[in-house]
Length: 110
Length: 112
Image (cartoon, rainbow over all chains, first blue to last red; front, side, top):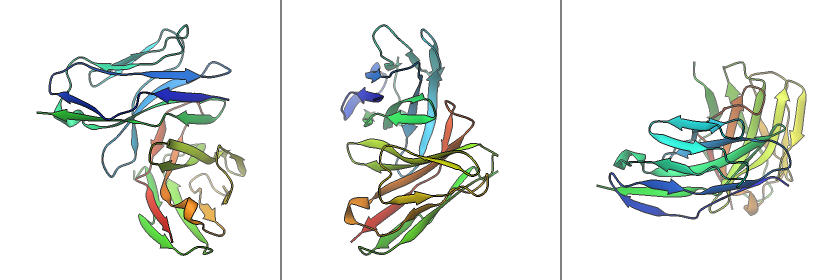
């Protein structure tokens, strides 16, 4: 069945450091891919998405590229801020169902 | 425009009790879904609906019932609560999948 695997956290970085959170997926069809972010005590918010191979999603300095050949959708940001501290979820959608990874907690220290 | 609302925010039940978690959206979305979030397991899909009168099972449907009589509302029913159902429950809505989903603030449920 469909599934998403993302790197375990927590990830701790200093402000202005480069961020990569790895995400790989397994799907039988051609899924859409998403990154969601969850701040403490809140629901998930869409961060970015890509709907087909080689698409790049971007938002608020975060980027991820849909790589069909490596079944990956890694999240990157060139310079993180303390306000980026949150839990990040990779997800895929295929035929009306969404599948989420287990989440990666990011801590950014000043 | 309130988005997706969920009630209650917190609930404590005893084993065997029943209850309904409420979810409503005011964005005229066709697609609505329920997830549970457990530590280290991410979000798992319980049930979803692609329109009024249409529901289907997700990954972990056992112990939960849903119905969709209107576009706006998608309640989740626990018929006989068990400690294994202690979790945080999120409702979400969106355009026809695959599309962006908008999440509610969650309900934290504890079953003793």
